[in-house]
Length: 288
Ligand code: UTP
Image (tube, rainbow, N blue to C red; front, top):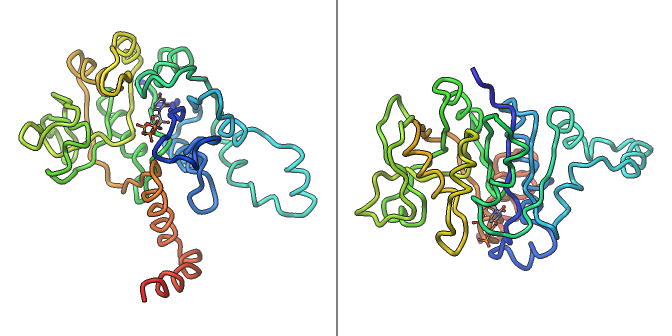
């Protein structure tokens, strides 16, 4: 049986919806509560047994690489002050996962970003996790998806059920349910009208892929917005081999625009009693 040990996190997009906040740093470095969004994503990978993470980053945005690098001066200062716990979360993660990075020289789309991982991934399956989306609840997506990958040994796509009137905003899949919440996929349709949608299951920020995706990405022409779309390559993959979709149990939180970023902070604050006890009085006061 092939084991899932690698993850690729595309984080090289321009993040225009998050400007000006994301001009000089990637939106994936914006904090949710006390740590950057990307740390939650790497933690999710580590929880699923991944020990090798490749960040796809852009030339101008080195902060992600720096965040996961050692910082001896800072560590010495914190150690002297007995305050090493302030960066303990990164040290803990660093013990479990090796973080690498590769540049996407031009922002040609998500599919093109994933293609930059070809050499690093080699002949292994890998998780692809969008760095601007985090999840709460149990199990987290990659843990749930890995169980399905281990069982069927096919690519696995995360799915979220969306209201019919919103299907035209997403990539929507069609297929047959082979067990509760698991579909054997037959089609993928990008942004269908409600009448044309094969289901209400939307593709949702997490994928487990096999290395044959790279040949399809290499043959994917620029699609919507002039970008090389991952969904277009997935359609070809789906025609060529069995694939599964799994309806996630966790809740999705987007940080790709200012309102959703703020909502994500509030929702995660609400889930932490110590934090919420300090935020709640303000929320109550604002509601008056
Ligand atoms: P988005 O569709 O959210 O695009 O990318 P974006 O550029 O980040 O943001 P907007 O739409 O301009 O506000 C989805 C994911 O794919 C990555 C992004 O970093 C994000 O995690 N991506 C996108 C790349 O790595 N490279 C690209 O060329 C495009």
